[in-house]
Length: 184
Image 1 (cartoon, rainbow, N blue to C red):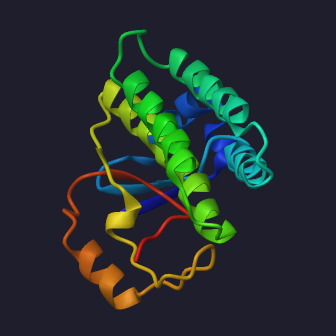
Image 2: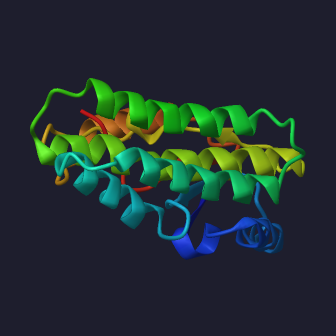
């Protein structure tokens, strides 16, 4: 199985996402695992959301700005009625809902819940786009496969559990998943 890692600059806008598909076509994309970062500077922007949240400032405006950027990217890749738009909205609704309900004063816990969403959103967009152009793949939530301890922001991978979960994947198909994320 081939493994490809694409950083944030590689998926920063619609043209960059299209370029990823060209790279995959040139390299052969059968039996691969694509590990994708958050789009562009999304991680930094989500870090700002967390900072604003703890300052009790207007973090919702920042969330909306990040959401608009992702909708704009999707507009460059999909017809306007594509299901990916509802998925993008759900991810951002989840961020806002989590922050409104959260009672934990633990900065690192909140950070992990919010900042990891950048990878979730970018991989959903890329996976949907690749399927749209007939590059069949399956989107994976890395949290179901990469297992860690409960150290927020610095989780240590439990390699035995992770290898066990990963070994159950079908090695004959392609997957799109996140970097930067694990779950205990």
